[in-house]
Length: 225
Image 1 (cartoon, rainbow, N blue to C red):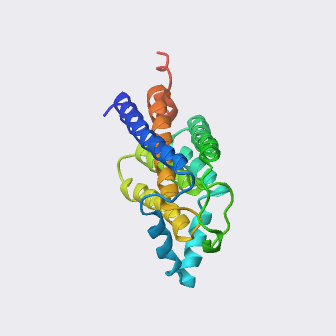
Image 2: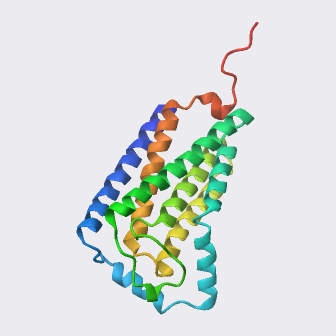
Image 3: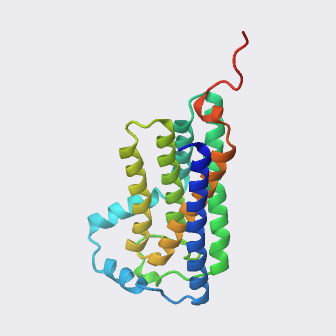
C-alpha cells in the first residue's frame, strides 16, 4: 500500500469516526444531561466491585492518561518514527502538535455539550470540568495511536506486540474513568471516537504531505557525480 492509499484510508477512517462522534455529541447535547443507552447500568456495576487493590491499580493507570505522560509518549513516538536527527525534530513536533491540538478541540466540544458528570458521591478519584467527551480517553487514544503508528512506520518486524500494548493501554485508561465513577461510558466512547477521528485526519495529512525523507532519512537530492 503506497502513501497515497494510506492517506486516503486514514482520512476515511478519521471522517467516519468523527461523523459517529458528531452524532453521539448531538444526542448527548440534546439529552440535557440525561444518561444514555446503558450508561446507568455500566456506572452502577463498579460501585459494588471496588476492592482496594483494584482501586489502586485503576487510579495509577488513569493518572497516565493526563498531564506530562502523554506528551512524553507522543514525543517518544516521534523519535521512533524517524531515523535522522532532523527528521526526529520534525516528527516529534508533529506528534506533540497533533496531541495538543486534539486536546484543544476536545476542550471546546466539552464546553459546547456541557454534560454533567455522574453523581459526585460515586467518584473514587478527583475530576473536574464537564463530562463529555472524556479527556483521559481522548488523550490516551491519541497517544496510543501515535505510538502504534510510529512502531509500524519504523519497521515491519516486531511491531505487533508493542502496537497492541499501546492500544490496550489507551483503551484501559478510558475504562478506568467509568470504573472510578467520574464518567459515563458514552463519555469514554465519545473520547475514543474523537481520538480515532482526529488521529485519522492527522495521519492522512501527514501521509499525503510529509516528505518521505523526513521519516526515512534519505537524502533530498542524489549526491553529485
